[in-house]
Length: 64
Image (tube, rainbow, N blue to C red; front, side, top):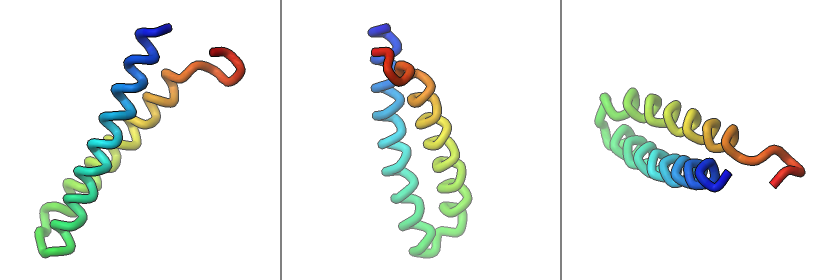
């Protein structure tokens, strides 16, 4: 199960990096970059998917 724990941790790190990228894109969109808003939506969807993967890799409740 240690391999799954390591993968889950990598997913958590990747989700944080994607969140940071989405915030940067939102700032760019506010500053007038029209393309940034569309890219931000895709990055946010990717972040949610990675977070879902991390959740699925977590051990079931009550079973560590």
